Image (cartoon, rainbow, N blue to C red; front, side):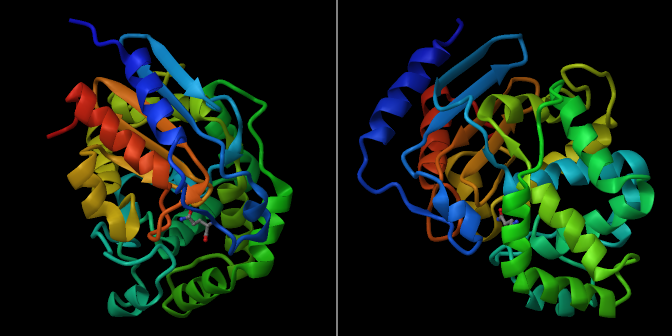
Length: 305
Ligand code: GLN
């Protein structure tokens, strides 16, 4: 029997928007602190061709670390499994900007979804792409089929002037010979990558290939099934930093969060869902987004477990 997804989303929306505690908007990137924490949107796309939305699902926001999965997928399509010679695939159990992990592993970041790992992936893309920043943007636009997707230059600049920990990570990686390009070049790319703005509806489209065995909405076989399995495994174990265990426990889906308040999660062969609420919990993940996804998988009984 078909589930009434729209009424499930409506119920979740009603319940969560009435909560007083909506978390705290990220302020360490000053430009992000300007966002109103009362925004809340959810968008769901099923692989049988239906889509459902509630709230601000067409409003664009800073995708931040969600971009790390898209950069990883472009790097994987260009370089294949060799990327895992330069970045490991173990969960960190630490915040996204933690630095000690680099040293423990001799300059090999623990996974591609913490900042140090994403900086290595950015370096790989810069080495492989002709016009790295534009080619990455085009890759994302192409996944969605929407050329209006763009960087937010104020956010990229804001992140550059406060990005001390990312400079520290990049310098450490460079000292271990795990960056081919200059620290400035790699971080320039990384800050722009994180500044891309998309809506829940656009993100749901962008992540379609991870639920659809590697074929995006518009193009077949962007990635092999084996690589899709690997990237989904990395999202499940590493997508939420030191809250990855909690997300698997409460929600039970591969996914990725960003400090802009977005979360994308998916169930292979079934659906992709994106939530956006800018208020974060203490671990830096969207407070209402985590709750919404927990309620969604509980109500629908759809999770990988
Ligand atoms: N651009 C952010 C940073 O590097 C990404 C962090 C995040 O979304 N968790 O700090």
